[in-house]
Image 1 (spheres, rainbow, N blue to C red):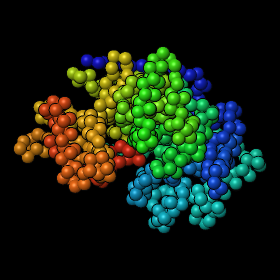
Image 2: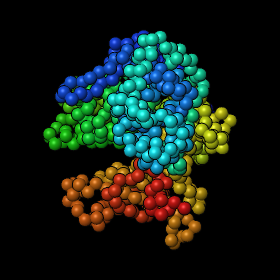
Image 3: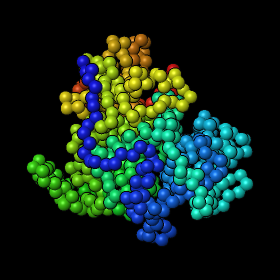
Image 4: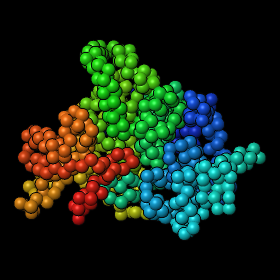
Length: 582
């Protein structure tokens, strides 16, 4: 039985440690003042607008100064918009001396946004035009504690709405006149400065309290194992409110002086990579998997699949001797993606090992990481010298991890200890005590370590299907195999009451299929034909498993599963849809 405490891996790179995000910006200004911080599109084709770090930090200081002059010192400040430059200004202008930032999920419904505004007790909110109607409702009905409504898009302030642009202009004037109410603020590194809501895949979301110390400890770990530098351009895709994108895709690039550009949407990824000359992307596995599939489909269309396979054999042979010719051998593929792309970091969901290897083999270093909002977020990751397909790498340098109450297979709950662990859930002491016990944070995820200290995830503790014979079934394991069936987009495995055995459960799966693929590849059109094809493959999967893991029922659909913004299936919502939420 594995009762070891697994210490963090070694640091690969030496980088100055920051105690708080204010120190981080001061360091970035000192080292990279003239570097491009952000690149934007303009109305002129092929012409990009840029902001240097000097300009960026000046605008942060101006906005923060104006916010404090309004009376927002030590207040909770909500933030909701699509990914954009103004979002990042608000974030730093709040956490670096004004108050507590409360980023909200941009995909939430009106009711959910209002509930979170009320629950967070925010007194100000920054928002884009997209949320104007909801904000008007909050104003009219005087919902929550919001006193300051601040538009990212308005040119001028009005009686009931402030303009962020005007606040920046006011702040610049205050700074010129000698105001230091924001700049001279001292940061309490251990005080809550960030309030983040969990994605709520299995239950209602909770507000997580994070400090500068939490975030900066994680940033230090990230920067000491990943090689992103001031020459890189990051294409940001995931919503910034999500802690994974916020820490890894926003704060980390600023820490190392890299440039950031924002993707215009999933259909624009390929063109945005070229336009911005992106070298790094940090996203969810499904995005990289789709990109890999598209690349391989294009190779096949051009009749070059055999040539690429030969190149892979030769390249992989050379790499055994420390010779890396991937970018040269697959130059045409790299050129089709802008020519600069070199690193993918995936998180927030499981990565298909075959596709992760496929991308690595083509010359785009691809690594998988793991973490939670409550851990700021990254707990473990693969990196340059730590790769094992199917694992999520090794524990980060500042942390300790152990497997709690492992079973006979060594699988148990992953628990973590270290300075990245949250302070707790806001106004929810009982929930905090349930997950932080004796200094260890209980993640709710199940996993195990192999003999080389690589960490593997087997599923969520709450998702485990327990049969009456005591056997545990991890649905994610079976879903991964079903998702490999040609024509299957995604699947959801669940336990369903067995009519023949009313006490026990039987395994069922809801499968989302690709009708276009089924027609093109197998000339199948009717759902009954497609069902027969997929069911045949599921029976083949059953043969490889013990009988208690057999899938006995198939539900077919073309409707996408209900997911969070980081593409995690909302299992509770899916069960509710199936009438199995009781």
